[in-house]
Length: 595
Image 1 (cartoon, rainbow, N blue to C red):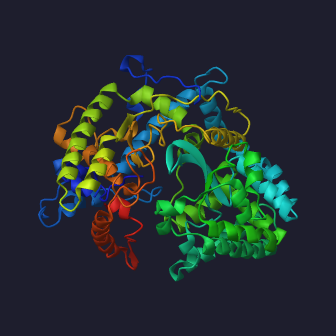
Image 2: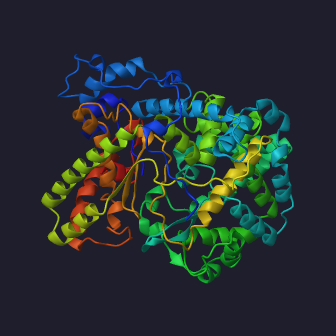
Image 3: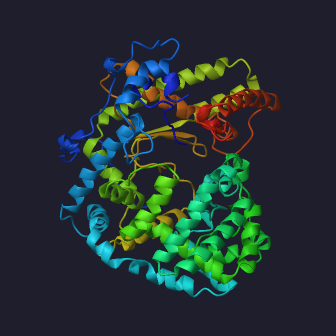
């Protein structure tokens, strides 16, 4: 789970922690500063920000408006950049991390590294992504073989086979299929299947009156993409309406984001044979055979209502509508790797219309995002070797231990919790596993084949490679050394099935952390983040998982009732916050972060 600052400036984090955040072949990572390659930080333009008393506004009382006292001057002096939608300490530190990564990928691309090396593969993605002339000249041609397959789909059997084949390549459109720890047996990995298929962020966008203009813009975007791909404009307009009706039907059968916060609604274990009976027109047995994974006896098919509707649509939706739907989503998904007309159309809708972003990010950032998407951990290894000091990991371990002891004291003294539940809460506390900086083992990238010819081809190869890597975990024990975030990510998370708190290297910098700083600054900065992540283990979702990571009720009925009474107050409090005129926070949706 991600942690975000509730106020924009890291200075507040230093002053008021309460406001800052209310089985493969592997090689050992470098851990010694002496072993790190030469890297010149002078080329990094974004400075590390730190506590600066000049940013405080003495005209505002800290006792009545701490946020204004700390942030008002800084906010006036630092407007949101055109290529961003928010701006604060997280974003500034991300900019710095991106600049470091930019230098590293340029270095890798220019290194003349041995063919097949990590540096060479990163270089291939980087160079093909920046060859704009070649990408423009190619137009839609790199995607044409896939589009031809879609055009040939003329019946239910062909459509279901296409869906299976696409899923095997990591291109799931209608649903997601991924590997994760079994909620009821967290030591082992099973397959999870969940709802999908929507081009808008969630089901409410398809029905809320306030989103009518967004829906109209989305239909126009679908038509634009289809027209750019060669469909007659009038036909594209009709097809866009059909695609919207198709997705609206899926949305009606989908669960909301609030419902999806409940682990019980994300977990529905059954056999492939039982699933086949639920969806007689879509064989899960055949899908798992195509994927070559051992999921026949047990996998999780959550949201059965969604999949029941999907099954009906396989037979009662015309093949022409399926073709339009799949054609649009195939192009939309590939748009970052296609010519500028497709990339710009995608940004105009998803960036500007949906998110309010005024400017597209520069080319180097967009291609760097692709490198991170395709080979993020490999780039993370270069990042750690270049800029992460060993002493930061040691100092962070001390902070985590001290804050962990503080949490233990709170649990021991919590007045409303009974002794039976308290015992289980302390067992969970004792089994917390902190991960700091970078993984103990790095992935092996030997099986990934890249080249200097095609940007889209390289990204599809990386996607298929990463998806196969994930699928190969199914039916095996959980690898507890693996990370769910790359070291260069400015964030942190809690994983309930591993009962772990994870702090990547990139967040362990000022203003959040400095191994040489006064401890007060570190406790107010990264200390708030540490506490935040530990508390996710006891929030509305994390509290449903036991010390061993299993989805298991370890609360007495009385204590769960007392917990819910208190969290309901938080829901009501945040429901009352009006973020912009007419738009209120959804307290149930944000409850985990608010706790």
